[in-house]
Image 1: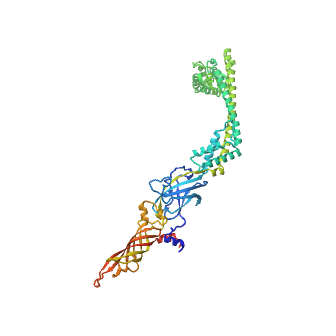
Image 2: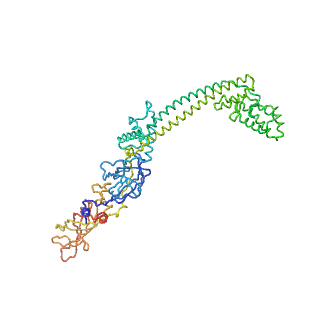
Image 3: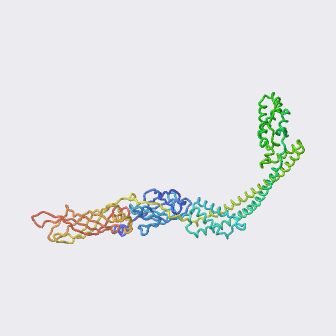
Length: 594
């Protein structure tokens, strides 16, 4: 037997083996995205928490996360588990956890000392993790957004190496928005300085310079656009003030590349194709002439519905039928007919087509009406010129805005690249605890045996008393020690936890055994075994080490009647106190190296 085995047998130390069992917690969300104060009371284990032996506790982490953690374990004393163990609690374990790979899965692992069988324990985790890839991307985007929003800085300048405070504020705000408090505030300052240096050494300053130039140019061009828009609005107001020229007797249509009244056109024997095209124009008519156009379109529908041989007579009759008169002069442009009232009231009409139409009509009207058309042409030309200028200015503004956006994107990417740097990530260690991992019991199902009974071997100092005569009796005995609960021999006795009754049951026992040797020697009396050849032993015991106990009880024996003629005997009990070994053979075989 080794020294370890002997020491364990004598109760000088518990016999333990190296951990070869692991329990993995299955979390409902990744550890890296949890916030301080989160509870994981529903965290499930992939197996029972073993009692009476060391084991590894594993908490999964992402593939690209580096982490350490403090794991705190203590026996539960109330319904819920506080974030820290209560003062004076027994069996408090504070363990370090580090990342390792188990079966291809990266986990935070800590070695847990044996738990007391049957007790409920609180588990609290205080992780310190680096940001995983996804959260680092989020952080870089938030920092870039915050910094770029301030450009240009006062004095129309970009960031320099003197702006460390701005970078630190942006980084701190981003971490707060992510609910990711960094364990060491000084590390935030160092990370911000690292980000600034990397930004300044990259493309950030050049992109920021372009951003300032194009942003300034965009402001200038926006002012030009505003001025052009105001001038165009003023020109259109002048157009709206012009009088509407008198209308022809019937709506004007466009046929054979010229403007002509519909009433005159039908006297020229137009082809059915021309009539169909003109009918289509009339259907597009808007403005004050819409009603007149609709009348003529309906009439042409009737004509075109007739056989071609009857259409000439129908057109002749059509010229004599009454029709609604147009309200104003109309033109055909942009594939539709509209009155000049539409041109006057809308900025959406292309002036070029209207100008061409009015110019062609000037020779077909009276001089007074021709003068009105000329005023319309000149005003429309001014509107058209201003619109062209406005469109050019808007295109220039769009180009400047696009260039500024491109520079802003490059600057943001430069900031994000700086934040993604490994040197920055290593500084940003996030303290995320305490996280309540819930209540877990030390399960006796994981033990190799549930020992309520052990072998006891000891020495009893008894004092048998017969008729006021006594004699000291030093008797070795063996027996079976019985407990009311599985005995935990790994937890130091002073650290046994639970209720007072739980602790009492771990140490108190009842012994049933016998003395294998001779009975007591009492002067004047003959003694013999109480039952057959056995001197029974009944006692109560109290463990004071893992494998030794003190006992107190009684040993049974019989005393023969002093009268030689009598064969009677009397059962007597000798009280004793003793010391014994509490030999848990199954435990020792399992735990001790023999």
